[in-house]
Image 1 (cartoon, rainbow, N blue to C red):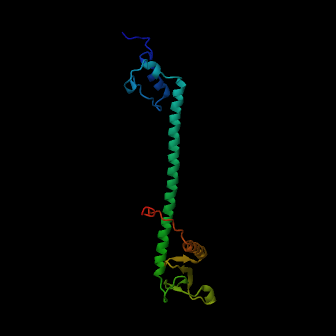
Image 2 (image 1 turned 90 degrees about the vertical axis):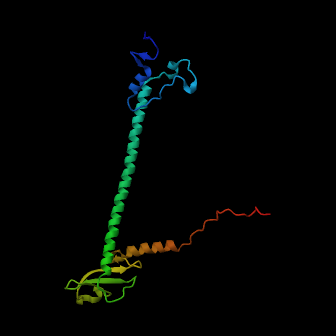
Image 3 (image 1 turned 60 degrees about the vertical axis):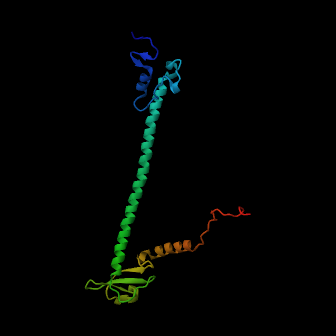
Length: 199
């Protein structure tokens, strides 16, 4: 015959089970052990009894809040990564476009040896042929024989810079040259030596 007044039971449900239900599915309670470390407890009921049920509700709310913060943190990090991927895609697209333009310009007709550092002027004949010249439209004046299509500076890496971007590109190259010309600090030697160990 079951003892209806047994501590920890109410209607066939233990106090621990009732507390778990009050805490909700988000909070996991530590399992009860009648003999921790092999030692029998005098009263498992008193050692494992649950305190204020509101504490368990607060525990469930804390677990839920932690889940929300973790999800928000992961979302923020993924958003940053997505923006970086989009930026890299834009850079890759520009690199491909510039490479295609540079290749096309290198195939333009030219009756001179092109030298890096010089500016070349692109013209187009009535036949559609494009060619490079070292004479600018201003130097031609009103007697410019063909349509002017643009001016480009040939860089030392054999890439082409449009005339309107030359000043900005030259400033970047100058800054990189200054950085490369600065002496690099040599770190002290960290390898072990035999100094002081020999007699």
